[in-house]
Length: 215
Length: 216
Image (cartoon, rainbow over all chains, first blue to last red; front, side, top):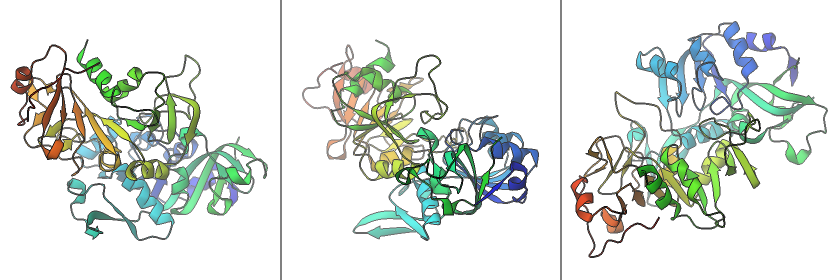
C-alpha cells in the first residue's frame, strides 16, 4: 500500500477506464475521489456502481459532469440526469438484478468465471444468457465482473491499509476491493496499526494499493 | 380507513415472531407501523442491515445509517450490519421469511410485474428480482386497481419480475392467494362484497363457498 494525494491517485486513472465505485445511494461512496475525477475531467468512463445516486451526490456527480459512457447498475430511477442520458443514448446502460450484480463482482474478485443464479430465469434478464440446469432446477450463467480501478470508501484505515467499515456504508465496498486491478481507498479516519483489531478488519491490507492521505 | 392503511394493517397480520422480513418501498414500508410491539420481527434493509428501527429523532440521523432509498433510519438493539453479498445471500438463499413488495400487475398464476413499463419507466430492478425469486414468502401489497383499471390481470402484459409465483396479494379490496396455482379470493375488505371485487378484477378468480372479511 502506498499513501498518495487525491491528485496523484486520480491522475493514474486514464480517460475511458473501467471504474467500480462503492456506495449505495451515495452512502459509503468515496466523495473526495469523485470530486477529483470531475476536477480532472476523466471522461468516457465505464462505471460499475449499484445505482446512479442523485444529482450532486456520490456517483451522481459523474452524470452531472457527463463523464460516463457505459454503466452497469441495478437501479438508476432516483437520478433523472442518468435516466435522461440513458434514454438519449448518451450512456449505454446494463441493468442487472442487485444480487446478481454483487455476486458477479464477488466472482471477479475470487477467481471464478461466473455464477449460476435462479434470479432472472424466465424474465427479460435471461435474454442472450445460457441457462444451465442443476439437479432439475434452471439457473442463469452470469459472468464475472472486474474493473481496472475500484474506488472504495472505508470508515477506518490503518497505516498499512487494513480497512473497517461503518453501518450501511459497507455495502459493495469490500466486494469491489477484491475485483479491480488497482484499489484506491479513502477513509474517514486513518489510524495506527492495531487500532482495528484483527477480528474487525474487513478488507485485509494487501488488497489496498493506494490510500488517500487525509487533510 | 384509507386504502393504504387497510393494506398495511392486513399485511402486518401475516408476520410471525422471529420472522426475517424485507419491506419494499411505498405501501410495504408502512407495514412496519402496524406490527404489534410484542411481535419480535427482524426487518432487513438490503443495503446491509438487520434490525432497522424508526426514522431517528431530529438531529440524531447519521450519514452511514440509511435505508435502501438512502434515507436516515435507526437501528434497534441486536441489529447487525453486513456487505451486499451477504445481504443478497440472505435474500436469494431463502433466509428471508417474508418479503412485502409493491406491484404493477399480478396475474391469474401469481406472476408479478413490478419493475418496468417499457418506453416509460425503466429505473432498474434493484433487489426486486432476487427477493421474488428467493424469499420464502412473497406478499404483494398494492391497490386493487389503478385509475379504474384492474391490477389483477389474466396475464401480465408488463415484463415479469420472476418466473416464480408470489404467495399472497393484499389489496384495499381483497386478499388473493394461489392454492394449486389458481388465483383464489380468500378475503374481502370491510364493507366490500364479493361481487364488488369480481367487478374490478380482470383475472378469473376462484371463489370458495365462504369468503371471510379481512381482520385488521
